[in-house]
Length: 178
Image 1 (cartoon, rainbow, N blue to C red):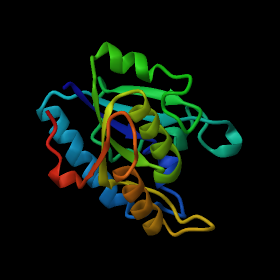
Image 2 (cartoon, rainbow, N blue to C red; image 1 turned 180 degrees about the vertical axis):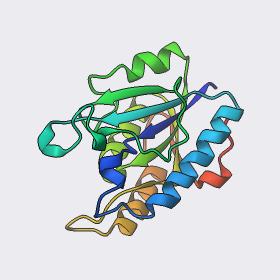
Image 3 (cartoon, rainbow, N blue to C red; image 1 turned 120 degrees about the vertical axis):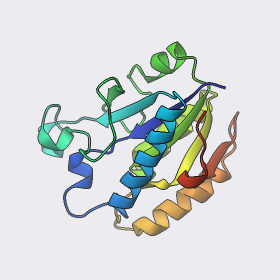
Image 4 (cartoon, rainbow, N blue to C red; image 1 turned 180 degrees about the horizontal axis):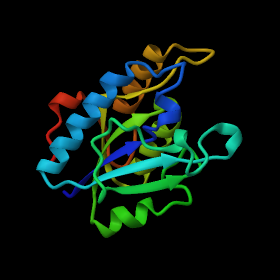
């Protein structure tokens, strides 16, 4: 199985301003652990970068739109822009994955309850084997749920999700990329 590491929406505007995501620095540390393992195994690293209008603060080219500076990103890493929660919606993500002959995705990033959830469900529906790094995704407190509850809830949902290929949920430290 050919794998790729998919990092979703870890951007300055989402991580570097209050309110901050749950365990933001720890999540970035664990994402960088996965990036290091991916590079060692020659697994492609793909970053998804959300963009929207100036009213939302993630306008293309703006400082807040940039990927987080603490990410272990290299110039040759693929970056795919998106404008919806779904990383596949009107993007080249599927074509890139198919071109790389990827059949398995390891997914991490932000926001657990929006872009991460939508992208990984779509990936599973497209037939990709999906593994979520259980402690390498995050969200912010929402009006109806605390971020800790959001992360725990979605880890449970994904582990029990019925799809053509089951979604696996594992701690980052236990993920071996090959």
